[in-house]
Each structure stands twice: as structure tokens, then as C-alpha cells.
Image 1 (cartoon, protein in one colour):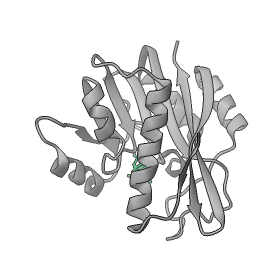
Image 2 (cartoon, helix red, strand yellow):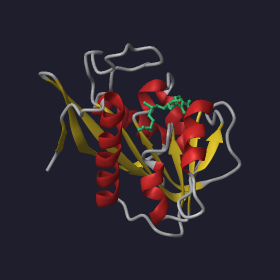
Image 3 (cartoon, rainbow, N blue to C red):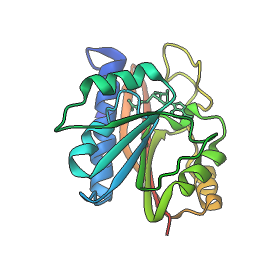
Image 4 (spheres, rainbow, N blue to C red):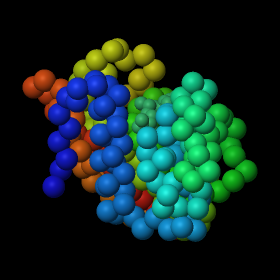
Length: 198
Ligand SMILES: C[S@@+](CC[C@H](N)C(=O)[O-])C[C@H]1O[C@@H](n2cnc3c(N)ncnc32)[C@H](O)[C@@H]1O
């Protein structure tokens, strides 16, 4: 059953919280998260998705280009529930580390070079690693009601994206609908695409 996200009382923040919850539920319904896993959350923001995953795995690294966002992760961290904040541009400067899985919610449309993004994800995964990436289906540019600064794509079409992932080397590429965000009369579906390295 698809989760429908109606306009929450606390606006954009509330919508992000509900979206990340729906993305998390879709991830755990498709992928077995294990307490041996090291996971990277790309474009982690304030860690909405990362903090949900953290109790289920060994370690979560939340990577982002915004120090302000990552500061909020630092503020939320406790010894019991911890996400490692990492201020780093992994597309330009690859990390030394390799991960069991890479997750991401609503960050891909902020990255101009989608092909390089998936090549980078592939290179940062262990040989049997997985990827679970959520973003908007193709939309008409009205989703970001506060403007489209920093938005490189008004969502994505599934088939061209599947081809880009295939070209990067990914296998077992599957699309799922994580939720549908409702704003006025308009509906914006959000997909989760899962894939494996090996
Ligand atoms: C719409 S926010 C989503 C945040 C979070 N994933 C969530 O669902 O609440 C997109 C995030 O992607 C980050 N971002 C954009 N380009 C990035 C890049 N090349 N590397 C890492 N993070 C990036 C932005 O700084 C921002 O925090």
C-alpha cells in the first residue's frame, strides 16, 4: 500500500520527516539491514533517514556538503544513537572507505552529474554491497515551493535512470513507490530504487 503524505501542520519540515519515515519503511521492507553493516547516507541533511537506520546496523556515516545540516546531527548524537557526520565532496574526492550499503533520500536531484554520482556510489561499495536511493518521480518544477535554487532535476524518469545505473555496473535494479506527497491538488510520487553491486 502506498503511503500518502498530506500537507502536515509544520510545513516543509514535517513533510521531510514523513517522507524519510516512508523511505525508511520501504528500505527495510526490501533490504535486510544487519548489525554487521557500515552504511553511508548520501546527502544526509539533518540525519532524518540516518538516525532511523543507525540502531539496526554497526555504523552510519552521514555525508553532506552543508556544515549547518551536519551540525544538527552532532547536536542529536548520543552514545546510544550515533551518526558520524562527514563534511566531504565524495564525487570530487573519493573516500578511502568502502560500505556495505549506500542510502539516500531526496538528495540526488541536487547533484548535477547523475552518471558520476552512480559511478561514485559503485566505487564506494563493497563487492556484495547494495544501494537504496529515494527521489522524486519526474515533476513539473512545482515541488519545491520555496524555489528551485540548487535543484538540478525536476525529478527523474525511471527508465533513463535505470540505464545510468546499469552503465555504472549495478545489477538487480528495482523501483518501488515509497510514498506520494500531496500538495493542494497535486501529487508527487517518490520512488526508492534498490540495486546491488554484485
Ligand atoms: C533535500 S536535502 C535532503 C536531506 C535528507 N536526506 C532528508 O531527507 O531530510 C538534500 C541534501 O543533499 C545535500 N547535498 C547536495 N549535494 C550534495 C553532494 N554532492 N554531496 C553530499 N551532499 C549533497 C544538501 O546539502 C542537502 O543537505
